[in-house]
Length: 308
Image 1 (cartoon, rainbow, N blue to C red):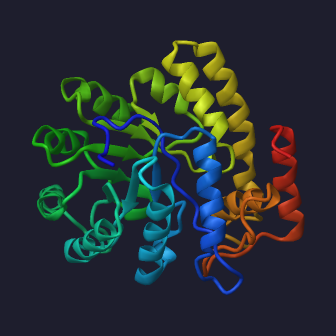
Image 2 (spheres, helix red, strand yellow; image 1 turned 90 degrees about the horizontal axis):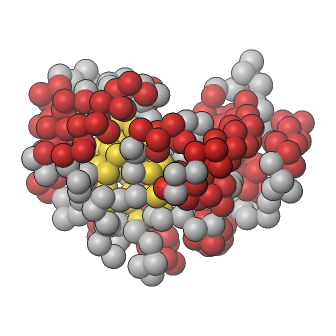
């Protein structure tokens, strides 16, 4: 399947279910994919932050892409993250995921070493020149410690280097600048990575959303998207309010003993386990698992949203 230009709609960053031994649980992964497809999502993004890509081995990354692409059989576009520190390592991942069938690659700025904007531009140009599929930029400064400047993104988009942007920066003003600048780039897709301001991003003119919470409630985000596209902003706000309440589950973990990633990803996986979609809620090491009491909190959020 060719990636739509622009890519629109709800594109969940697919969780990676693991076995108790922390191998990829392929049967659970495929059930999750079926759950998302049944929920009406428009594409799938594997090997992103919610997928725990940074914790997976190269073998496991390839296993995830091969399993999802093989299972969807062209029903939906599959985007694959090629997240790594430097250009040569990203290029290795591009070769692997495109050989496995990914229809687009999602690329962060380089990290670990401090990079200048000119080096970031070179990075994206080099990746795009080598990639047989479209390149989507992933702006996630909390993880890579570099904010992609709007002029850099729009310049690369105008040159045909980038097919889209997934914005997880939390900077709504900068996001608006890119949405406005993209008005002259009709094939460029601007996607929000926020669970809690999806309605606002769509009202600004975003093409879609990549919310991790959509793993748990794809139907809710699809309803939100449809309300927005129909101009039913009251309906969109009501759905967003319900999803914001559900998103409270990410704080179920005790911050005195675990990081925010452990709490959020642990909550998503606990919710999927409680809903009977995946077999095991374990997260990748060194993340700390939720306790029984914390899992009960997640259950209460699900019940409050009508999902249990």
